[in-house]
Length: 77
Image 1 (tube, rainbow, N blue to C red):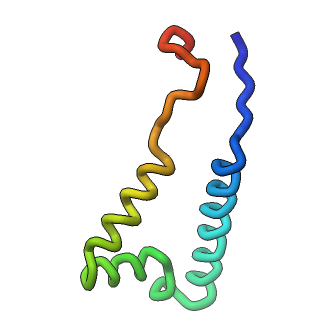
Image 2 (cartoon, rainbow, N blue to C red; image 1 turned 180 degrees about the vertical axis):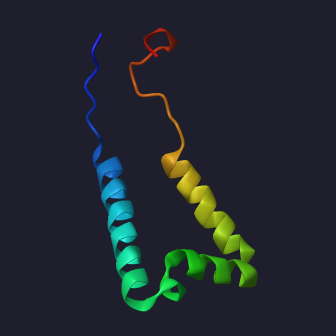
């Protein structure tokens, strides 16, 4: 049985935001070097306030973690 996938608005906005952030980060790295990347910022913040990095990781895990789509059973997988 073929299932069509329609992304909810929150998922679409989150996906667009993550892709846009990646493009902006790439532009900063190309223009200013790796010292201006989001990764470098998170590493530096992690040494000062590890809870910030933990919270960001928790949120990203929550946003990208697997959730079974509605109407899909184990037999359909």
